[in-house]
Image (cartoon, rainbow, N blue to C red; front, side, top):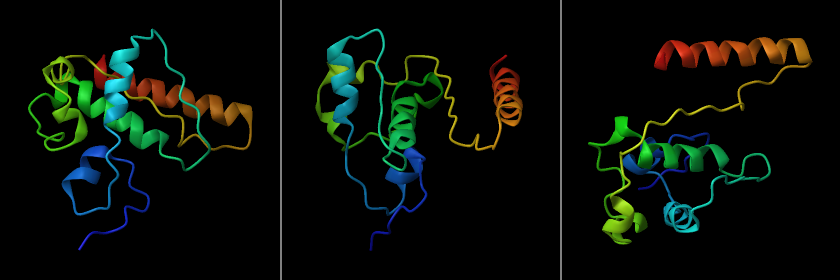
Length: 123
């Protein structure tokens, strides 16, 4: 029986466990086909932005190269032209969703803390 993924924004967890899941991996194909230098993704709150970014991270990140996360999903059937990008790039994931403060000073402090954590992880 499948479970509802309430609060799950980790793509790998979503596809590896028995969660209901809508395969949106064609988004990766669209990004590669468009060849844009920048893509702006705007959606309302709770609309799957973090999950989509985690999906991109899992696909492109060199640290995820050995995983078979995309086996059987749409992108894996799109062809080698797309799959050759799998696990080939360094990816830094940065989300602002946990910065929820009431004022500028606290938000700036939290932002600096997140940047410092990233630097410690990748620096």
